Length: 26
Image (cartoon, rainbow, N blue to C red; front, side, top):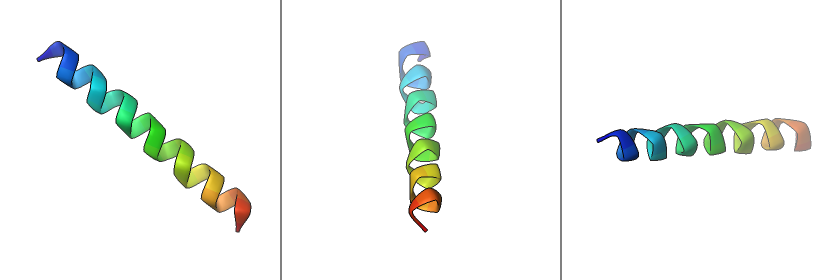
């Protein structure tokens, strides 16, 4: 379960980075 939780945390961080890059492009 810990590994799955870590993957979810990493995925959330990636999504945040993508949102930031999109905002910068706009």
